[in-house]
Length: 387
Image 1 (spheres, rainbow, N blue to C red):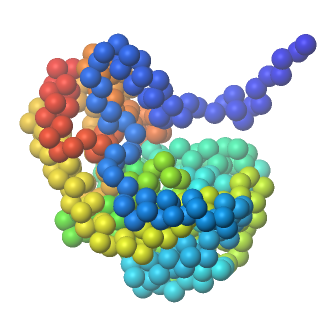
Image 2: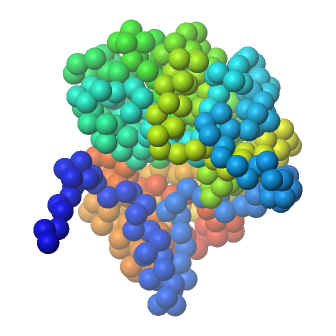
């Protein structure tokens, strides 16, 4: 028998940035090491109690055990619409302008199949979230990377859209930003949308970190811009803000035509999130503000403790206004990957090399705020020993 070879699009796919972390963590733990994992972006805090109660109740309701399909649970879509209205003063049609997702990740990736023909141009930030690359890669698109530079506040320069070869049919942007923690103002988002629209493209605005903001900063929404329905989609997630990373629940909002295109594609890949989890998501969004007060304060305390600890050992790091990430230059000679691997093997400390998120991330390291506030002194001590 002849063993089938790898298809070219799979063979050329780079490793997923976090692919080796679970195995490394298990290996180190099996060797008796005290592992500190700041690699994955998981707050590790308790899920809102209303979500647990709602899911428990939903498990006993027969009507919630059926296929969700793309429209999902009307109550969840209604809660999304109400939340967006409270948050951004925007009116959305719950039947035509909102689509539940199995976490925002799959929606961001599947969008490429709804927006691109083979050979079409897509602009993605570098460094950036892996689905921005993965979706277009599997859609056989032409990828144009826009480097995020410290000198520009890690903002995706709209000029990169104008400079892209061909006609950019899709542009990915993400503020507050993973991995850099950079933030944007509404005027910037408006300019990004206008540039994308002028080139005939769709702006995929990943706003998964909109609720994790500190020091009085309020992240803007694409829905606050003019003309967003025609050329934009905004993605949200319950993962980071509500500690529901494993529940896989999010949503996208946009004009009915674009939502319909994404829904049509997704119909061939999935049948939507479990209705019981959507019921839990509805309960969470209905009580979101009360929960987020404590959530943001806990993460702010972690941020401050982590920044102080790293600075105490000579690491130059800025305190981000949003997200649960610290982004700092590699504080030792060699590549960011070499530094992170040395920390892993010598100190059982797991971080993410910036180069794993794009070539422009070389020389940088991402640390997630995954530990209680009193854990960052030990993190700093381990980094100091590896310098």
